[in-house]
Image (tube, rainbow, N blue to C red; front, side):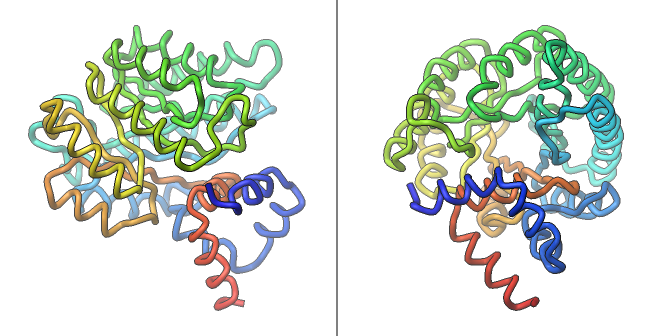
Length: 322
């Protein structure tokens, strides 16, 4: 694991550094490589271009750790409008794969902490009802929903919430972070249940007591979780930019006789776009995780921690624009 990773993740929790970075005049322009704007109006052309190019989208309205009822309500309202926008755009573009018995080109990604999970003793229940409201609108408009993973203290509650609501919305998905020790068992349970699962390596600063820290160990855990999901009855969503993992996925797909509509690759907006297009050209299903909104600082620092080479890009861009 890069020696920069813990430093960058520590910075993600620094309110002082956040104020300095977000207040720097050129930061917003540089962030646009990884964030599709601050508003739905700025987001729309990005989504339209991706869908027209044959890629699918999972859109995240940035925000987390909400401790204000009003902000949680505003977040729900934003997601309802976002779902309407995505449904209208993808139908206009008509990008749905013809053989997709599972696949919906448009999806939203949601964090339970943004929906009020931390609002005191009633928070978990509030988050469940807010997620149910979002899922109802998504079901009406033919849009999917994935619940994002957050730090390990929320994992049990997140998986429990998704399990509860899948009885109403069987397409509801959840992200599992392979670097957590518990994820091998979580993936086995998900594979047996037929769920949609986004498998990622992990993006938070976690203690060694709950998560792998060495790169080789994280990679091994990812490979094991990937094999479990691919051999199960669910729908794996393989979130990786790692060439070795991409090829491993293709090999497992052949071994497990998985067709185009039986799995997808997921990559971040602004990261390896040429590889995204290459996979699409090969007939593989690719979904791009597209964040937007003003609360981009935490998201950006986690992306830099995952791939410190992005930090060099950010620094060069700041210098060139200053």
